[in-house]
Image (cartoon, rainbow, N blue to C red; front, side):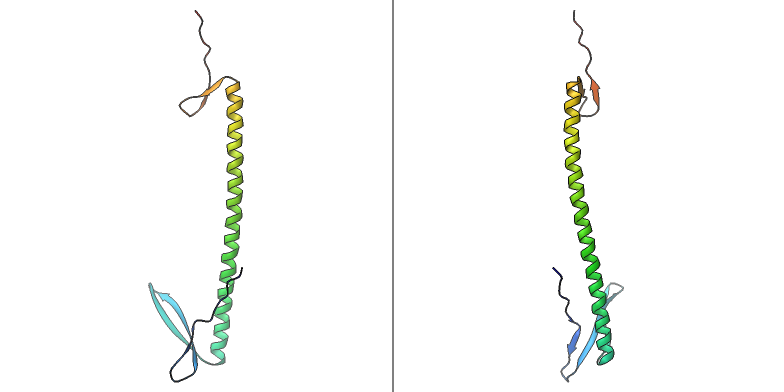
Length: 113
């Protein structure tokens, strides 16, 4: 779902007329920049809108890629857990045990007296 971008930077003043402004951060503070009115302001607004669309498109692509990577991570984790379970079963059948929940060791042969 594409998010609709609005021209919220167009202002209508009391004396009439529409004016285009931009907001940006300078040294941590938001500064409003007056661009103007008329055809030049229209072109600036269209350029700013295109920049916002490109930025939003990139953000959506990054989110989709992140989601795909998370799905792959989950599949690999499931595979890893299954492989660990199978390995543990084979090792236990072969006479091994886990020492302090760490490494696998072969069980010592019991001494019969």
